[in-house]
Image 1 (cartoon, rainbow, N blue to C red):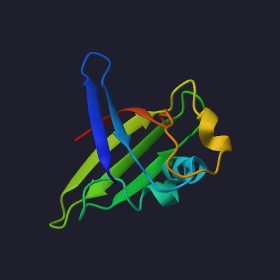
Image 2: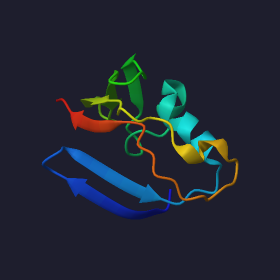
Image 3: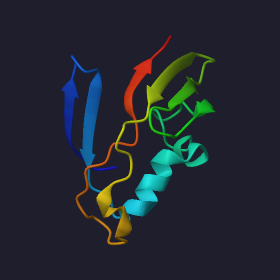
Image 4: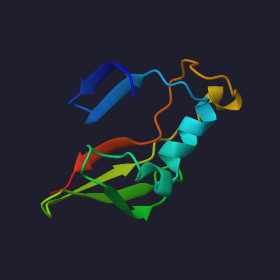
Length: 110
């Protein structure tokens, strides 16, 4: 994923990552909103993720854990924002600039 910018807001506990993808917006949206797809790339290499709770409705919550190569485990959680679907998701054109935040406030739990 070619990240072009990262902006953090400690007061609101948010981080915005901007990246360019050679994929349609709808495919990216599905990758971030479908647990089975998200588990394939969430977290650093060697730390696979498992989502144990998934409610992708407005205000819903996700709970996940990442598992390290030596048996370590880190947990996190997040909540879905009020405005979920990006307007550009109707387009199948790759590399379109879109602002969309499938989840906000993912936090490390332990």
